[in-house]
Length: 239
Image (cartoon, rainbow, N blue to C red; front, side, top):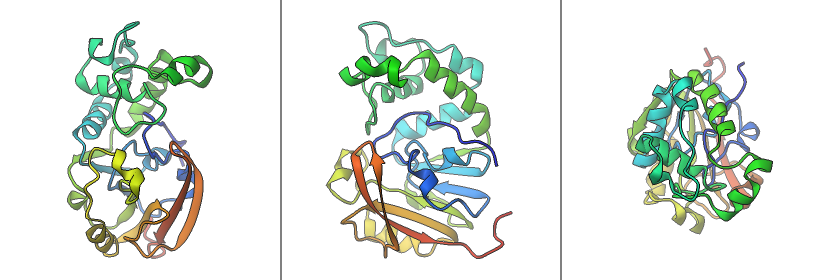
């Protein structure tokens, strides 16, 4: 098994830290139905990965990263001192990516580094800096086989796979996402018909799945109290 990569950026409600506590993938293909920063897939980059996200910013960043070369990433500029990401001579997708590194876990990219990031950037490896670009450059060769679909979870393939379903929270915390207009009952019904392994989650209080467990962990929200649904695939499906 190859080593994990990332995170390529820090995202509100991201699951990169929590991913090792979720069931490992049982199928060759991983489908993240609400990709965000793809914290689960980044733990298993050698798998065939299909990402789906409705947000054009998220989809645009992933499309850029999948196609980028390490040299291209290493040549990207800093955010000008006293300026914003709009002052960078770089593609829009890079400015979005840098904007996510301006915060310690936002649902949308910022224009300039937050006060917290500016204070702790060197000690905690925060912010859009050369060290972060080196880490991203090391990761992009390992995701060339990934796919990104700009669309709704209904555009995701239903075939045999490890389906990782982490939508905007159904609770009040989900309002921070730009695209939080999810028909949760329809999503739950769809999840129950997916082929293969299904891993779904939300915060305590959500009611769109017949939850099978509970898992609390630290996240960008602080202490996150989650409910979890896991349905294993049949033995022998992993190829």
